[in-house]
Image (cartoon, rainbow, N blue to C red; front, side, top):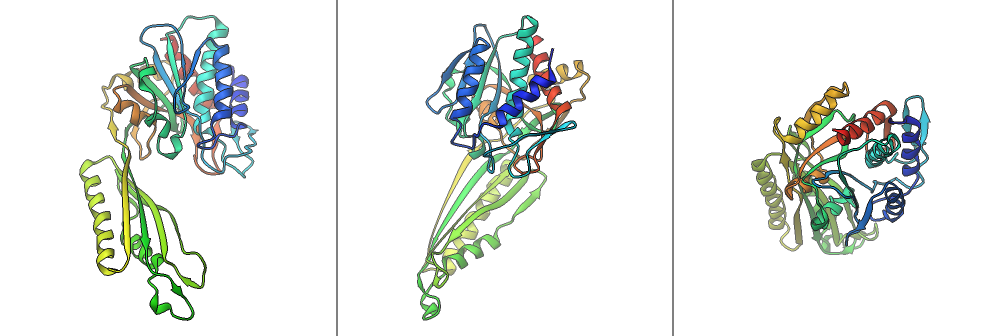
Length: 358
């Protein structure tokens, strides 16, 4: 039986372990010890992803990521009424530790009740928040499962993600010409001005129901009394529509080329990289049907909807592993307002347990 107090304690213990992207070793060690006690064999692949396996044919894969975004160091979880939040100075880390806690609680519950279950394989990845780096570098020769659930969705577990976009990141570097800003500014060519003009020509925000574009970082210059010689900025665009992706790529390149023509003495370089690719699950997909069936058995009302975000499921589906994403009870992810509703967290663990008892 799912024990809410044990689940809450496990979750709070997990969020107290600092694990910003690239620094997941401490939580990987803690999870390895926990899963070894539960009878799993632990393997760390060359990238540091954690794979936990056991005997059995055709295991179900359960997955979540170990890393969190910043500010995520020194998290102090506050349990208040039916909610868990941070003290307001950091994120909570429910993304994705609520998913990890729910998986662990389901396994603990079944073991305590001494009930037989289906075989499972667990994968906890690194670097999901910085472009699905763990999944993209996962040693798939170690993966035995053909079907999977990723616990990494926003909101309640009853929310099933059925589509996710292709994500293209871009970086633009501009080299102008330095000059003293007070003595002879006319001899300079401002890299920051050129970068700013490019950014202003790009569409930004929500472009349509399936597509967004965002410029996320900008840097440049060295001192305030010099015309800046260097500037750079990074951004992304994503869409669930292939034609829109092609048009956005073309638009970004055309804006950059126009700047090159206008500022012929500058040097402008760009790099566009596909970070992950889209997927779409039909209503009769085997994983959607499986999730819906289990949710109905628990009295939960399943909802299917597309997402503008990416998860490790984008990579798993690309590698032929049938995969769906479910909610993990976290809300307002990536902000200091992030919180977890305890009833939803319990439902996530109940759903995971029911999956394993089917």
